[in-house]
Length: 360
Image (cartoon, rainbow, N blue to C red):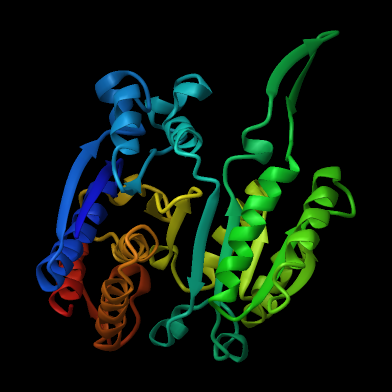
């Protein structure tokens, strides 16, 4: 199979971690007889520096012509980078928001899995971490507060900022269907997270999710308020299978879930539209303070590449091979600095990628 992949290396550690994911994909291609065809585009700070905008029209068209997009991390230090002195629509993250919208990437999948080998890195109490957990946060990605109308006005000498949270029943229904479809292939449980005791948008969310649930009698549904969910993620993460939620709540909860795994450097993600097309990226940021030092953890990006093979190319056997190689390297006690523990061998970004590729 020929896999046409648009690559966004991004900013900070992005180029380093993407290089290791490509190293692993190239090994997959060699072993299983595929062709990986890469086309690079710029986005984020790199695009601002080169083109004056965080995402060009040409880059969008190149992404649309591919089968999938593999991305590193974008952005920089918000307090020191000149990118953040620009207007909001010209900052690095504006490029990502636009790309998501242009590609209709409405479903964000973020797995949070605690490897047995990393249990000691989990910040939770041992009686909690010892139970393990394997959850997936299904986040609506192109609606809600982040895409609603916004403005800052001055009235009677007082400055006021307004952000609008809007969801239609169609937007809610399509992400709910994705959530139940994924749950049907996992442990058959959906926890729908909202703030229905306060927000009209959440009350509509709950109503539509309940309607969709009728088509999935084999999948259990529960509702949970977002503040309770935040608490339950650290109290008893093993209770969750698929967490289904709107854009802002999903953004916050997925970062919380990532940290209870021991390191955000382990967390992959996929953003899908209503076809096989998807954008795949690590859940973490660009970490500009360690860029170029060969100490970043590439595993999240490598696991994102595995998700790409699984969801965009239906190459389950190849995805399994990557995930098994990651687990084997961890069993052999190789660690990057963020997941290092006593008795293990510390390796850099490039060496970690090579170790994983060698075990495929």
